[in-house]
Each structure stands twice: as C-alpha cells, then as structure tokens.
Length: 219
Image 1 (cartoon, rainbow, N blue to C red):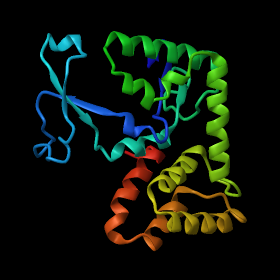
Image 2 (cartoon, one colour; image 1 turned 60 degrees about the horizontal axis):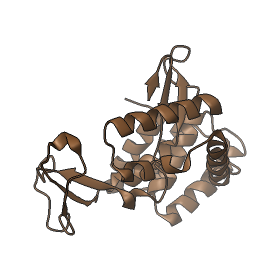
Image 3 (tube, rainbow, N blue to C red; image 1 turned 120 degrees about the vertical axis):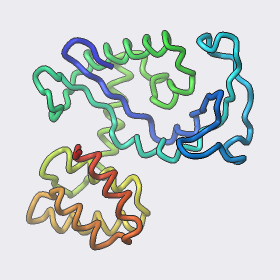
C-alpha cells in the first residue's frame, strides 16, 4: 500500500497458507498444464463481477512458496526520508491507517475472503488489535534470536529466512554455531553464507542462498 510518502508491506500469517485458493480460466503454469492432483476438488466459482458472468475454476493452492513469504513480516517505511527502505518505522497509527486503506482497495478489487485470512487482516479492526499483533510477532522473533547478536536487521532477517526453510536439526546446529560466534563478534552476512557452504548439501544450497539474498536485499 503506497500513500503519500509512506509505503506499507504486509506479509502473510504463519499457518494460513491452507486458506488460499487459485482462480483461473486457463489451468496452466509457466511451462506446463495443471496436474490432476492440482485439479482435485476444483469447482466452478461465480464470485467475481469482473469475469462478466463467466465462471472460473476455484481450487486449493499448492504453491509451496506461499509459506516462505511469511518471513518478511510487516514493514512500514517513509520512502521520502528513507528511499532505500533500510529503517522500518514503528508507528501504530500510521500502520493502522495504511491497513484500513489496503482493505478498502482489496474490497474495491474483489479480493476473495481467503486473502484477508491469509494476511491476518480479519483480525485487525483497531489500533489495539495491531498492538497485540506486534507483541506476538516481536515475542516470536526474540525467542528465535535469543543469544545471537546480528550486525544489522537485514542479517537478522536473513537468519530468520534460513530458519523458516531448513530442517529442525540444521536449525539447531545453525543456532548453536551462531551463538558461539556472537560471543566474540556480531553475526554478519558472510557468517551465514559460509555456514551454508560448510553445512548444507550442494544440491540444496542454491535455494537457501536465493532466499537469503532476498532477505539481505541483494539484487
């Protein structure tokens, strides 16, 4: 949501990707047709006015990326004062204002109900609701990042991105190694990259490096 000098980015809620549906008149991916598994349970849907009375296919999403987007959380920036978007703002009133406008635009553009659920917008109806969401999110981040000092917030997000996509045993090893590093130096992006090279199988490194670069905002 962009409004004046501000931009608001909202990430989806953990555990709600099962709420998502896909709507299409052409069941095709970039390079293939939908599989029979993807089409299981598909039904005709008539909920959109812009299709002018033509039904679409509605089916549960199988997009495995739907979960990985959660790591970004919610970000509010003043892009006039911070054009590189390096300093997220904590301004509940402005954030709630942006959420309200976002919901209005979604309604105007016939966003399905599942989108409100996926992004947790059904739970935000007051500044008090937003404050509780912040408390919950901050608490989860504190638990994950306990005893680890990062050189900047982007590196911290990179660590969280890795945690979100790796197996539990690898996460435990990563956390233990970074806690040792943090006793002497703040953890940097180079620490994370070196750890991936040393501890992740080569066939899995590409995807993790890609997700890490996204969090670090590397082109």
